Image 1 (cartoon, rainbow, N blue to C red):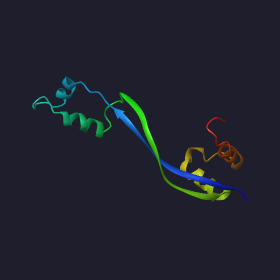
Image 2: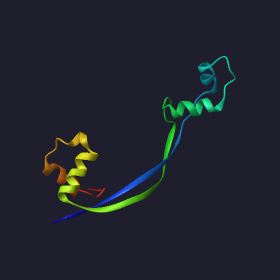
Image 3: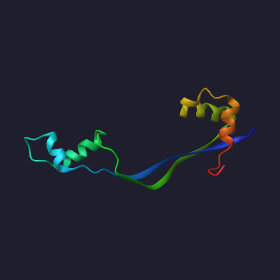
Image 4: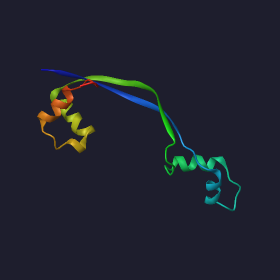
Length: 100
């Protein structure tokens, strides 16, 4: 039976956000505007992304799974594709090269 290598990674990105200070001032006109307000807006996901650059990818772990286990993982990680047939899922899994 074929085994499948599953490698789990974390990707790191540098993301920038740009906010006009006069617009931040409008959020609280009774206080002097502070840079931390911009940080709060980013933390609250209220700001659109200005730019992004991929920094690195770090391997967290790896394991070997059989076909049944990898199909279960497929459904767990890609629940929006759970309607695919087993044959469609395996075809996608077996087309593993980025260039395919």
